[in-house]
Length: 255
Image: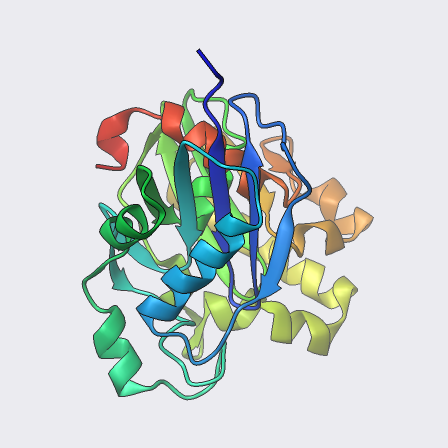
């Protein structure tokens, strides 16, 4: 029997990355990345995924990680794709209505003709790094803040920590996201990452915290040394590796 191959797709605010991987997480072709098109109604995202799939080796199944609240493959809320021109631009009411309750898993399955799994992008990222024991939390640092929690390898109900206020009405997304990193520089921004970790530790009481996403590599050595032994910084490649490994998670965690 041929080995099962997974098309792993990481849908971000600025770009969409994809690769075809085997069960061990080994890519069978060079990963591809395309800019996220805006405005982005659901049909255009599905078309974009289909075009990416056409340029990669054939796969037996597909995993899609995307920002926002995803329940059983259905979009409850997505922060970037409801905007007119990308993250932090004006929300388009028509796009918000189009994305609300959109069954992304069914649409991808129908278009690609293979079984699909659609999860929050931080949950997919976590699938690529977790040990599968204890309470494990994943925070992704990129355009904004992504989060996921696992209990014994099972995905806990998703919480949009990025939307919670952290101070003076500022959300975690605004406090730690890419625009603030650019404004502050890596040094001051890294202090915010440290404050974020120290503030959330007594909330979660995690056994391990994983910091991933494209900006995790920008945390300064000084801040890294102060994060604690319960914190692990992981490469952004986990977002694609997790696409293959997510299928090994207990099935009831993703419906």
